[in-house]
Length: 68
Image (cartoon, helix red, strand yellow):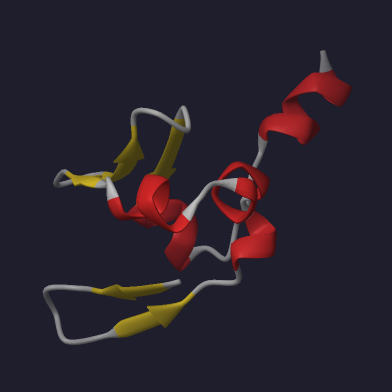
């Protein structure tokens, strides 16, 4: 996935970092809502922060489950 930022940078993000996106259909992935803080896919129940992408963090769901 490619994310173009307002400051001119482009981030290349492997879909493998986000299994819900990886396993979603092309149509589901196209239904993204962009906000000042990140990206949201309602149907896929996925939220990705820009800060997380810049920090190189992928899906934190599994990590949170293990820590609980």
